[in-house]
Length: 152
Image (cartoon, rainbow, N blue to C red):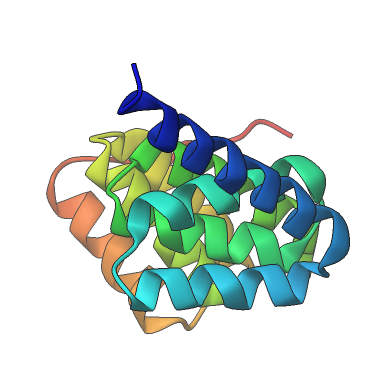
């Protein structure tokens, strides 16, 4: 039991630090801290901090961007898809083509080619000449996925 106490205290102290950090720091500073953790290959901590930060700042582009990055690096495709979808929804027409492309790649990693095609078409509606989105569109067509036609 004595050996478990330091681990418990460390975990409790770390949890307190996370709570304190998300209460006192701006989303930009938290994003940088998470990026530093990723750079140090401390992915579990980066994942935990990005998850906690997203709970505190659910509408922050800074937090959504870093959350998407961390979850992609950890190959947590469902969480990455959620973060990217929320980011694009938040940004609306200002969402960059690269963000659309990342979401398409995440969906393809999940094996959801039909949804990937839908997202690719949506991205192309905003960025019709983007080479990455065009390449994804063509690649999806080559494997037999057809774009869904919407009825007005």
